[in-house]
Length: 75
Image 1 (cartoon, rainbow, N blue to C red):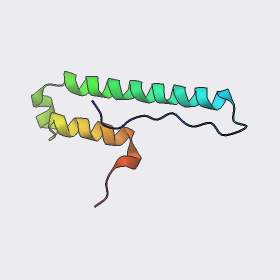
Image 2 (cartoon, rainbow, N blue to C red; image 1 turned 45 degrees about the horizontal axis):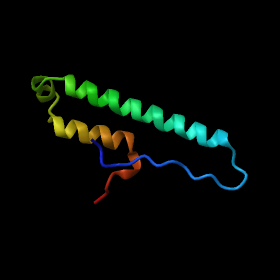
Image 3 (tube, rainbow, N blue to C red; image 1 turned 90 degrees about the vertical axis):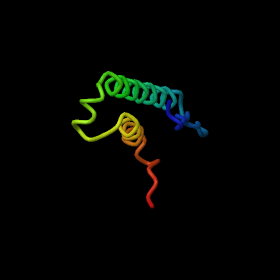
């Protein structure tokens, strides 16, 4: 599971239901992409991951970072 939460946008005065629905669809699509990517990595065996030089934990971390680009720490 990821530790990053998807948050719903807040509607301001004058903003319609369409904006909220489009944001919900975008969150739904993002969740589907995340699940598909995680499923693909989980189906890979350890030899395939070793061939590309990454562990399963590193692959999952990179998936999370790719789907949440603003959350990466810069040291």
